[in-house]
Image (cartoon, rainbow, N blue to C red):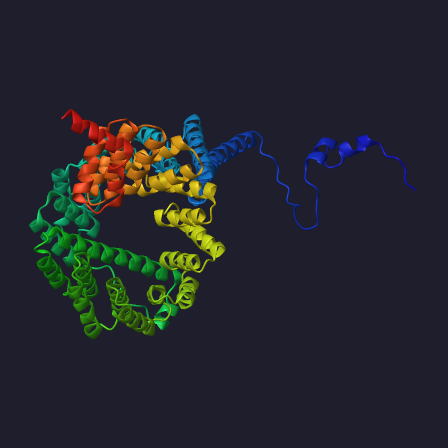
Length: 631
């Protein structure tokens, strides 16, 4: 049995009390349970130090997180710059706000400032570039000015000044543009050759654009005379010398262009095995370099053509020979093109024999140019009217390349000239199957349809051509003429008015519009357009005759006499003009003047029956007898 014990007996057991028993750790069989007694007075200090360390660590993490967000916004803005520039601008503005918040946080927390980093410059510079891409030049300039107010390194200042100069140039504020270019040039060193060349070229472009050619020449010469010169600057310098008229300097710059080192060989190609082994980025780089080289070769060809045209007409032959000789050392294909230009020069001077001789010389010495030579020879013989020889050279061109639309059009033209319209139509359609926008094939096809009375097809062909090349006068005339032939006066009037807007000083178009208004019985408009046609081209007898008849119909005989006299001066062998003058004199009662006119006609044309009839009419004959009696 368990009996209750007195609690006081616990106080007598080995000196333990209740309070001391509760404070000590529990007893175990082996060791302690892992509890440690608290040291009074030290826990509060340790806890405060730990919180201070955590507080400092969180500040750094917050600043780093904000900086990371700024970088993300800049990268998103740069990615969207090509696809969505407006959204890119919004991201750039958010980045600047986030960067400003970061600076403010660092100042409040008494942390190290970010002036030593480039984040502030990168954010605002990107914002200015985004403004520039969105066409907001003024905002971009103001942003660059804000960046310039802060202390920046020299390379930053140079880049900012160059961008400001570019913006001022795009706004045609040439003085401020040159000022910023000069300031950026002052900040560069002699080691920054490429950067200095870019600035000199930019200044030269502005001076050339404003007509200050001699000053532009000085800027371009600072670049072209160096080993690292580029072809664009040399070409601009050549243009300046050409405008000044300095042939010798132009020839020296042409030789300088030929001496420039090519980027890649435009005629070379990559081996297929090598192409499969290299990466896509390397292929893109090679393609870009090849395109640059092609553009450079195009500039060389343009310079050569321009230089040939600078020689006077008598020395043009020597110019072609000199230029071709210089090109043969390195640009043999361009030298052949210059020889073709020489043949075209003789064609423009109607020296077809010399041109044909030059073209035929390429048939033997250059197989690669046989297609172009055969096509040109076919064209030359066609202009001479030798259609059979033109057809032979068109066949030779088609043997080289059956799918050349120009050769097919030449062959079709030969059939057209020989009235074989069906064969010509087939060749034009075949050329359009290769190139659906070929102007000559589509235009000639419309003419074929017109000759074959296929008005609907002709209309479709010319309207398609009008959609491809808007407001071409030849196409507009054919459409208007087609409507007029089908008596659709309103549609013809519409198209002739469009043609008149393109050629407002063409007397033939004005005459046709006047005739259309005459059909519509609109006398005032018809008179207006005929008078305009007469003002521009006062020797058109059809217009002069129409105006004279119009004034006769409205009983304005004296005005009509002026036009008949003008027509008689233009065509003195035509009797009807003088007879009409005499008739007008009779209408207004000036019989003496009418008799003088008729007598003059009878003297010049004694066998003219109409004149004799007019002289011996009762009114004129009786007037002649009265004059004789008075005498």
